[in-house]
Length: 268
Image (cartoon, rainbow, N blue to C red):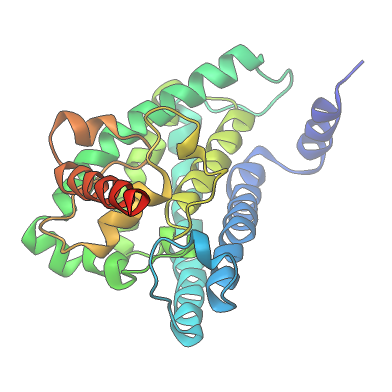
């Protein structure tokens, strides 16, 4: 007997071509996950909700938030969708498939974990390169227009950066030729991760409180509010690359000073 997931997949493959699933449906899935996960922090900031968990005291104005949203829609339609469409033949060549049976969970989990590790490594070096003087001025400074990030700013970037750092996201799937189901799961988890890192809020239930080596919102928020030449914290997901190459020293020093301040306050 087919599982609910297999039945749903059978419906999709019976009503849409693989090309439609890999392009238009993938785009719609991305937009749904991105905006549904990213809008809450926008409204938290706009209405002053959960202020005790907000990392920065500063807030973006509603008009500045709206500017981000409208530009994102333009970038997604004019850059992301054409890129997904153009990349389909390459993914197909590398082994992308959509037919039943769905891959076993052991394969799905191992591939997604591999994608996270590889993406983090490639992203670190690409992001670090974007913080060199010329590339920052002409490309990466667009992303840093929002020194106080909220979830949707995670994908607010210059089109050249979307193409440049987007390579880190697709290199793993391109190497393994996954099932489309695995690709969708990877995309959804990666979107949720980057939205959380840019949320501007550090909650008691934030993943960084439970997952070893996970950076999270507090780790990445530091990157946005410090001068670009001293920001560090270049990794997308984990913290070990910045630790190995010493690009988290400013952040670690700040955290140490915060702990000393908290201890002094308790002793008063």
